[in-house]
Image (cartoon, rainbow, N blue to C red; front, side):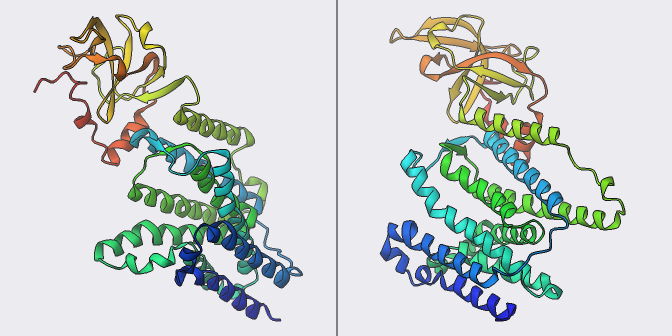
Length: 398
């Protein structure tokens, strides 16, 4: 059987896999579709792919090492930006079941499909007509975009002009760009590399108990921009290698740099999840100058509220934000409960309202100058209006 015919048959089988969703039979099957039927369909597609192409040798591995490295860096950058957005936008509880049974069940619903999908993508893009590789890349990517869409909701995507725009911006464009990128790196580096890039964001979604509370527009930009710029760099790197007679002249970041980036990402994730008894907070005003300035990061320790003393710099909760100020007096309210009178060192007046013990959220242990400015700038670019959140912080009286 010719390769072209094999690819056509395989494409039809993949598209037919969404028939149950298109006809809404999947809804009637309920959870058994997601947990049993769909994984088994993709295992069957993987077997067909193996039978079709088991004797085909893939020789397109000239740039495999370099592309692998760039994809690893790209994945780390994705998570770095994702969790920085968490510090800007805040974190929220993961809506998925985070128990061991829930995680195991959720992983089963997408892991077989993900690995088989990348395995199939790898053999499709490497066995198509190489003279028309760009058209095949677009065709293969579009097939997998169709697989990712919730086909049974297709009518709702186009009910109004607003829902159409939201579908295009939120779902279609990010999915198309990501699939083009996955097809591209499958071609140059193989299905293991594309599986890694596709797996980690999904893994975080199903495993981590807390995730950045990011709106769909921001997430769409992130999911589109990261693979797009990574593709540009990979393409630049490949052209550079082709023009370099001595490949040893092409330098990449060493293993020490890679380990350092991995360590930074892991620490940021753990900080965001509250694993450590301390956590960072970016300061958005100069109300505590000269002790703490805007753009500094303060390290908060979750100490017992009964140990708070006059002179301590504490963090306390207001509606939707935190304030970091010094305790200048400890007194009791009308109910006999202890309250803290706080003030910014750089403010003329004490804060407008006494701080209840229930509002207490840790004590400042030390600060790191300037390190929070990138997050602060990113927040301003994303229209996070810090000025509206610091009425008490600036000591204003309305």
